[in-house]
Image (cartoon, rainbow, N blue to C red; front, side, top):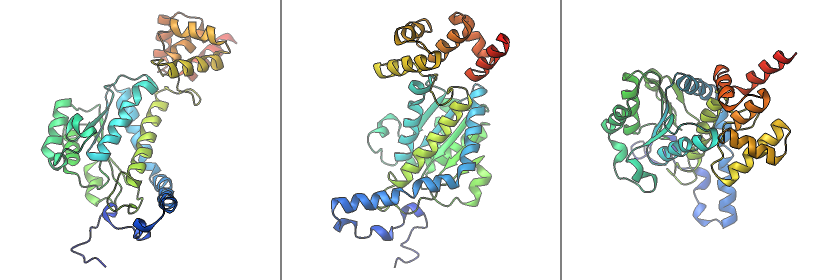
Length: 308
C-alpha cells in the first residue's frame, strides 16, 4: 500500500489495479486490457453531458457575437485542443481565427516536449493578452490533471478580460473551480492502464468532449443540414468528391451539374444548395443565407411557403 505521502490524490496519477502485471501479458492480452479500459470512457463523458452542453451554448454564443473559441492546454491536452481547432476550417469552412488552440511552449510543443512550459501561469496569462481576449470570447482550459499552472494562468487572465471561461479535466474538480470558471467539465475515466499516461483514457475523453463542443456549436450555427457538413469547402479531391455527392443528393442532379454548380458557388456547398433552391445568383443567395442566420433549413422553409 502507498502511504498518504507517497500517493497522489489525482485519479489520473493513481495506479490501476487491473493493469499491475501488464508487462507480463501477451500482445493480445495487452490489447484486450487496454480496450476494456477504453470502454469506460464514453459512459464517463455521458455523465457530464449537461456541462458539455453548456460549453456548446457558450461556444455558439461567442461565435454568433463575432468572438472566438480558444482552447488552452499543455502537452497532450494542448495538442488535442490544437487538433480540434485545426479541423474546423476544412470541415465547416470557418476562418482559422475563430476557433484557436493555444499550447504551452508554442508550436515546438506540438511535436516534442518543451520542458517546464506548463509550469508558468504568467506565460498563459501573457498569451491571453497577446490574443486580445475579450468579452465576446469563450476560453476553454484543458488539463487532465486539473492542476496545470499555465492553463489556470490563462483562464484567470481571460476571465479578468471579460471572457467566458471553462475548464476540462479528468479528476475530481475542487470546489473553487466552480467559483473561478463559468463551466467545469470533469469526466472521471479512472486510473490509466499505464500510470499517469493521460494520452490514453483521459486523452480519449478529452477528444470526445472537444468533438461534442465544436461539432455542437457548428451544428447550431447552421453549418450542418440534416447530418451533412454543408459548409465544407472543396479544397482537395476527397472534399471535392464529397461536395459533389452532397449536391447530387440534396438537389437531385447529376455529378456534372453538381460540379458546375459548385464552381459557380466558389466551392461553397451551402451556397450552391441555396442557389439551386432559390434560382438566385451567388451574391443574392449569399444575402438570403445571411438573413437566415446561415441555416439552410430556414431558407428552404421560406422558399416552400413562398411557393404555396
